[in-house]
Each structure stands twice: as C-alpha cells, then as structure tokens.
Length: 353
Image (cartoon, rainbow, N blue to C red; front, side, top):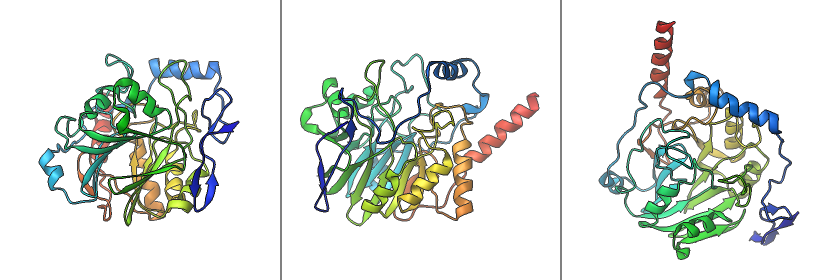
C-alpha cells in the first residue's frame, strides 16, 4: 500500500487516502466481500422481489422555492433539495452538495431509480453558485447533466481526487476544479473546506471501481461548522473528524439505502446517530433518503427509525420537508411530515386486503 501526498495538520504530517499498488483507492479497514452468488441474489431480489413500500404511493410534500426567496433568505440558511443535495447560504453566497436534478439516478434516463418528487427549484432558477461540493462519483451523487448545467453558473467545484478529472473530461473548465485528498483543505470565498475520510467505494462502470476517491467534508464559515458525510459505513474516522474539527453546529449524515447485506458502505440509523455523536454534532440532519429507491427498506423507514432513536437519546434532530428553509444555527424541531403519508398508505393496503 502506498499513500498519496500528505497534508499538514497542527504541524504534523498526516497521510491522506491510501491506494493499492495499481493506483486504486481503498479504505483503511478491510471490507466484507459479498461474492458472486450473494451479489446475484441481491440483484434478483431488486429486480423481482422488492417490497412494495420502498416507493411512496402518495405525493411527497415539496415546498417550491423561487430565486427571490433564496436571495432574501437570511445568511446561514439551508434547503434540502432531495437525497443528498443540499443548498447552503453561507457568507452571503450559495453552495450545493452532491447536486442531483435528473429524473433518475442512473447512467440512462429510461431505467434505474426514479425520483419520488421533483426538485423544489430547477438549476435554471438557482442563483449564481459559488461552489459545488462533491463527495464521490456514484450516480445518485454525481449527476452528469446537472454538472454540465451548473458549470455555467458555478465558480468552484470541490471534489475528492479523481472526481475532478471526470468533470474536466466532461467539459468543466479545469480552472474551476479543486481536488483534495483526505485531510487536505482549501479556502474559497471566505469558507474553509476540508476533505475528510469516509468508508465507501467509487465507480460509474464495470472497470473503474475505486479509481476515484470518496470523502466527507467539513464546511467552516467563521464560527459555524457543518459536516457533510457523503456516503459512508460506520467507522472510527468519525471520532477522529470530531476530535480534529468538531464540535459541529449541524451534521448532515447519510441515513438511508442501508441493509445488513452491505454494512461497510452505508450506515444503519443506529450507526448514523452514533456517527453524529462521534462528530460532536449539536443537531443532526439525516440525508440520503426520501428521494430515490436504493434499498429494500420502506421509503419512510429511515425517518421513523432515526427520529425514534434521537428521541430516546434526547438529541436534537432536524427533518424539514423538501424545500423548506432551515436555520443552521437554530434549526426547528423535527417535523414528522412523512407519518401521515405512511399511515394513509398503510390504510390503503389494509382496505385492499
């Protein structure tokens, strides 16, 4: 195993993301191997035996947003646009995480996971974007069509190593792209951005697995700190990130698309909450849910479980409806907007039985 360039932290040299000898990135801990038969079994169940409640049958509430509303919003506001796409207003400027606006999170738009709801605002209606923060290159986080549209109105793209090379190959000007390894940081428009470790994998095709890096991000706006998990299984790195960069006013932690069959790359809700605690987070915003069907659990299961767990621990949690504004420093209490939908769906199933 070799390491890419090192960064300096508190006067110490910190090794960044590890690679294998063939140049592919790897996680510091050994991952479970599914094997061909288990992988085939999961694929067959996805294709022919998925539970019916993985997709909502009733419309998810979405608050439409106008450009003027965004311009008038107070600084340090946040808007969930769906899945892991979050719009932040920091230092008077706008930032997007993992922008996915296409109808499907897929290499093609005639097949693959389809949106439960439309984005609350289109790319065309968005104000100028200072920066796009990309965690990795999977289709539900890196949307080719969205990137090409955003390139015209975005000043900076901050990515893990290799992901920026994809953007440049797609036509994004190289001058707009910054690529970071784990623990490396950059300052952009008054914000400090740090690429931090995550436990996941990458790739968009059959032969490019782990040729690009995956990462989480620390976002610092003077006295306000936000954590963006990207995708990750639970690992000790959350404690280290919390030790070095916490506490966080808000942690945006993936809570969705989990299953016991792939424990290394996505967290169960119990693990998402523990990651938030490890990070020394004040308020948890669960993301990576409510937009795409990417697992075998009910579409509302992530919300049900994470809010119950947070209530048991008496930990603040924010679950705003898609498009509703959230104050990063003083998030509103949880809104269980999904419960009426889930109850109506259950009643409809019972009536048909």
